[in-house]
Length: 353
Image (cartoon, rainbow, N blue to C red; front, side, top):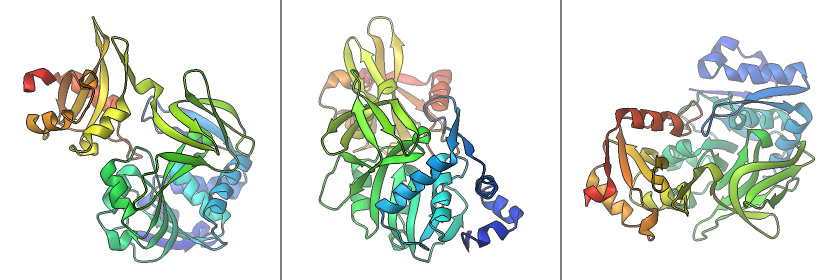
C-alpha cells in the first residue's frame, strides 16, 4: 500500500493509518512539528550493538538541503519514502520531503518495494537489498528519477543491472553520525566508477591506519574517525576498501572481508553468504565462509576458485539455515555468526576438493 500526501496534509493523516505502514513515521512528524532542537536516532546495529546518537535540528536540515541541492530539486518535488523511519536513511527521506515542501509517497517498508508504484518520483532512497529486488520490476523502478542506494556494498551484477535502467542511480556512503550520506557514487552504463565524491560541505582525510576521518561544520562534525578503510584521491574523491573491523589478520596476512565477498559474489548470491573470521591457535585468525544450506559444495568450490591469492580463500565453510537481516534490511552478521557457531555445521574448504 502507498499513501500519497504532501508536506502539509501529512500532519492531518490518521495516526492509526500511518502506524499500519510504519509507526516511526509519526515519531518523525512529531519531532518536526514540535520544533525540538534535537532528535535521538539509534544506529542500525549491523556491525555492533545499536547506540543512540543525538542529532541537532539545524544539522538535520543542513543535511537535507545538501542532498536537495546535489540533485537540483525544485520546491514541490516528489519523494518516495519506503525505508524504515526508525533509522537515519528513512528519517532523512521524510525530512527532505518536508524541507522541500514536496509531494510525499509513503510505502510500508519491506525488502520488496515499489510493487504498486505508478507515479513519477523525483527522489527515493533504498537499501541495497531493496534495490536488488526493485530492479526486478524495471518499468516500475523507472518511475523514479533519482535513486540513492545505501546500507551495503553492490556486486558487479548489481552495478550492471542498475546501469541499464533510465533511473539515475547513486551508491551512497554515510552513517547515522553523519546524518545519512556524505558522499555519492554515480552508477553509469559502460563506466566502472569506484570513487565516491563528497558533498560540498564535507572535508575528508586519512589517519595512519588509512581510516576515513570526516569533518563538516554544516553537520556539527569535527574529525570523526570511522572504521572504514579508504583510498583518498584529489577533489573530494575516495575509494572504499572495507571496514577496519572486517580485516582478518591471518598469520600476518591482512584479508579484507569485503574484497573476498565481492569476488565470491560473481558466482554466489550476495544475500546468501558473507565472509567472517574465527580465532586460530597457530594463525591468530582464519577466514571463514558462512552461507545458506542451499549452497552446495560444488558452487562454493567454483566461487572460491575465483580468488587469485589462495592464501586469502576461506579455510572453513559454515552452513546455516537462515541468513538474518535486521529491521533496516541490512544483513545481521553478528546474529548469523552466532547461529553458525552454535549449529557447528562446517567443513574445511580443502575437504571439499
